[in-house]
Each structure stands twice: as structure tokens, then as C-alpha cells.
Amino acid sequence: MTFSMSRRPLLMLALLGVLLAAAFLALARPGSASAHPLGNFTVNRYSRIEVYSDVIRVHYVLDMAEIPTFQENSDADANSDGDISLAEAESFAQSRIPELKEGLHLSLNDSDAGLRVVQVSAQFPEGQGGLRTTRLAAIFETSAPAGEVSLEFEDENFAGRLGWREIVVSSATGVELTGDYSHEDVSQALTQYPDDLLSSPLDVRSVTIGFDAGSATAAPTLDTANVVVEAPQRSGAGFASLINTDDLTLGAVIIALLAAFAFGALHALEPGHGKTLVAAYFVGVKGTVRQALGLGLIVAVTHTVGVLAIGLIAIFASHWILPETLYPWLSLASGLMVIALGVRLTLDRGGSGLLHRLSHLLPFHHHHHDAPAPAADGPPPWRTLIGIGLADGLTPSPSALVVLLAAVSLHRIGLGIALIVAFSVGLALVLAGVSLALLVFKQVMDGASRRAQSWKLPYAGNVAGAFTSEGVMMRALPLTGAVLLLGVGVVLTLRALGEPGMALASLLA
Image (cartoon, rainbow, N blue to C red; front, side):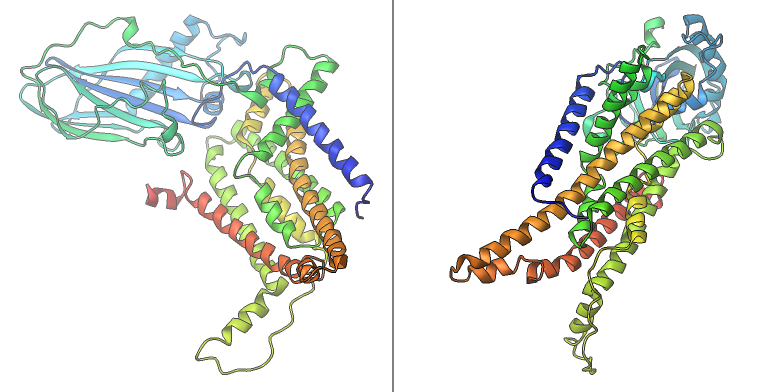
């Protein structure tokens, strides 16, 4: 199956028109929710230790994104009316404080300080897809001993969850602190996450300091303002907000599905997505239109199934498997699959022959038989396309997972699955479009080069002939594409190994 010259422009224009129209619907649709800057999986912790002459205070803030709030704090709405009242928020905070307190370890001169709770409050700002986030703030304190003091503090709460961990130390006038500590409040009590640290958030879990507070000032009197930490304003949620629409008429649902399709297409265009992988593959093969479309279908199915599988884990198995811990391993599996495909294609497309010829250049090589002929570079087998599709769709978008969990929370499972499918189709269509564009480009180059050979200009025929399907440039593309695919696999693998939760990430930290 090939494009005719008359139909090809019409098909490409129609595809472009659909993408632009859907993108307009997505961008024009207001986002009513907010996106957490560190991601939907994160549990972020902040401690500020204040040293006075009479007491030592610990201001503690817990900021949980949508998915951990869904998993850990779904019982905050005690009467299940969809709204968390002040009384419910206070009751929730009081019920959670004992557990949080157990995870905080403060010792003075090697003895447990015995923290007591002074104040506590909780808020539940709306996040993506109508799901709530959690902001719990508390103040603990203990009496300050006289003389020289050695203080050790450690926060073990949610030790296995991804997120920001910050410990700040401050002191009253007259106190000289010693030790390895930070007095800079980088996140302003988890209200302002610096953009340059979003990819590598702070991970400070303990601190040890020394001081003598005998001549320091006393602690100020606390009031409510000391503990309430208002939620920061955040950017719109985009795709996840579609599940939270109040209008469920047929027209509104169709618009929502088109917007989800556009969000998937835009997601595929973001840096680092599978378009590079697909492009590297289709550069080096004589693929067909049917195979390009089939690759898109495989990606759509894989992405949708991945979202549903991780969603089920988040709902039913989060006590045993944290969903966020799966993402690095899925990314690693994807990278290794691409490496395997790249190696195989490199050998099949002439790499083995090239290696054999290079071996003749080695001084200790004494064999002089001919290099094996490279394998024919015909259309790729479907099993290879399935491998590429699985590698690209294996790691689903976290925002799609938020849509699924929000759909469960709002009892709109059918709409949620439909939105995820539309998102996956939009993502896959862009990747299929990249493949089609490369196939069309090679056809156009082949035709243009053959016409250029008839110009009768000096050297023009030879140059143009290099770009025909039988020319040296086009014959080199299969091996070039295979090597590019191998390189993409290496990059994906190294990136996965550097993600939080992987062994290499801890070595690089």
C-alpha cells in the first residue's frame, strides 16, 4: 500500500486540520484544577527547627500530591458528601498527627526529646481532575536543656515515597549553631518549589547540630497564623480537568474526547517522547503505510492497558507496590527493548559485515575470507513493529493515571476510560504521522533524485543518483537508522537508571 501523488497532499492536510482543530479545543478549554510542580506521585516533607533559650520547636509541613492523597487520605471526607468541612479537616489532622510524630526523631544529648504537639491544621486544595491534594502543618516542641547541647533530628515519614525533603535550622538571637545544616528556606515551607530543582528535588532527611542556648531569647507566643500554610497558586491541569466537567451532555462529551485526543497529540510532541524512537526506526526500514498505522495502533493499545494496570495497582495494591516505583522499571524495560532491537537491526542491516571488514584492519587479524553479505532491507517484520510499539507505549502518562483515579472517585469510569483511549489515540496518531512523513519523504526524495539525473548537468546526475532508492545514500539509511535506534535505546536506558528509586540515581546523587 503506497500513497499516490494526488492523494498524499490531501491526506496530510486533512490530518493536519484534525490535529489543529483538536489542539484548539484543548487549549481553549479552561482548566479548573491545579498541577503539582513535582508531579502527581509525590509526598513532600519540610521541617524547620527553631532553637530558643526555653524550647526547641519543629515546624512540620506535609504536602501530598493527588495520587498519594487518593491512596492515603481518602477517608478525610467522613460523611462522603464531596466536601471536606473545617471540622472534618481538623479531625483528620488530629488522627494523622500521632503517626507523623512517630516518624520524627529528635534527640538532645543522645536522649529522646519527647516532642509534644502544639498546633496542627490540614487543608485539601483541589488538584488535577478534581482529585484533592493534602497540606498538613503542625508545630511540635520540647524543652531546651541548659549548657552545650548536641541535637540530632531525622524525618522517616513516607521514606519510600518520591518527593521533596527539606530541613531548615534557625535560632534566636544569642545562639551560635555548629554543624552541617542549612538556614536557607528553599521552598518557603513547600509553597514555592524552585524551577531549577524540580528535576532533582532536595533530599535532606536528617541533621546534626550543636549549640548553647543559655543566653538566647525566649520563644515567641504562638497563634493560628504560625501553623496554617496556605496552598500556593499553580498552573492549570489541562487533560486531567476534562473528567471533572459538570456538563455531561452528548455534545460536551464529544468536545471532551476531542480535547483529550489533542492533549495526547501535544504530549507526543513534547521533548523526549517516542517520536525520536519511531523516527530512528523508520529511517532505516522500507516500511509501509499499513505498518506505520499499525505501529500507532500498538502504541495506543499499550498505553491504555498500561494506564489501567497501574491504576488498578494504585487502587488495590498500593500497600505492597507503590505505582511511582514502577515507572523507572518500565522505562528501563523500554530502553533495554530498544537496545535489543537496535542491535538486531544493526546486525541484520549490514552491521555484521561492517564489523567483519573493520576486523581486517586489526594487526593481529590473519583471516582473509570475504565479509558476509548484509541481509536484505525489505519491509520490517511485524514482530519488530510490535516490539517498537510496546517499548514506546510501555510507560503511560501520569496525567492519564490521574484521570482514571478521578473517574473512580467521581463514579465516571466509562468517561474516564474513553478519555484515556482518546488521549492514547492522539499520542499514537502523531507517532504514526512521523512514520508516514518519513515514508513520504523517502518517496519524494527518490522521485526528485531520478528527475534530477536527467538534467544533463556536470556531476548533477551522480549527486542525485546517490539519493535514489538504489543510490549510496539511500542504501546507507538502513544501517544508519539501526545505529540511531541503538543510540536512542542507550539514552533511554541511562535516563531510566538515573531516575529516583533506581540504584544508579543514588550513586549519582
